[in-house]
Length: 200
Image (cartoon, rainbow, N blue to C red; front, side, top):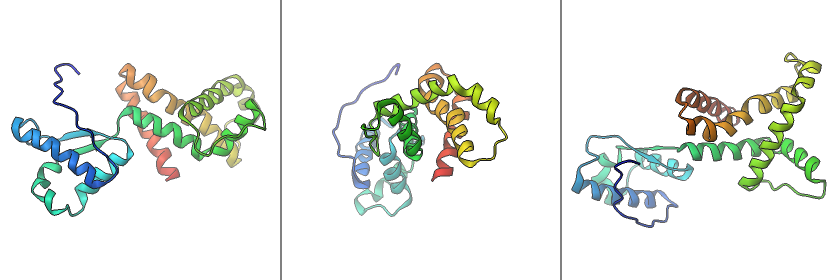
């Protein structure tokens, strides 16, 4: 953030492609004065709606009022921030493996407690930390008993969850990104991408 200059705040409702186009138009109007973005690719750090709506603007017919800005809008490339990648991955793993985490939740907190279909972020982190800490304690005995060659699909999916997915998603932002371990970060992003591709 060194040498960063804040030009101003402009509150926007970002709920549609039109809203995102209005926000990009504000940036383009500033650029018309400064010329900083000319012939440059401009990354836009955005969460999932930002990804979808900005990409949609790039690949669909723009409304007439935005057509003069089309070439400038094409220079904006939406990217997902490491924090959003981490948060979205944490949530997706718990949603995809909800039955596993529900059993863990009932074991720890009792049968009377109910785990929401879409738990809050602090609860997701708690469940993931509990599962990884528990796995570290029992891993050697499980591997000794079943080994890596057990063909049972539930066993294989559970091992993949505990050995790969949970460590990846817990480490990607808090350890890899913040420590500047770029090569390992990219490798982990690829692993998370394969998870997302597998589960659509």
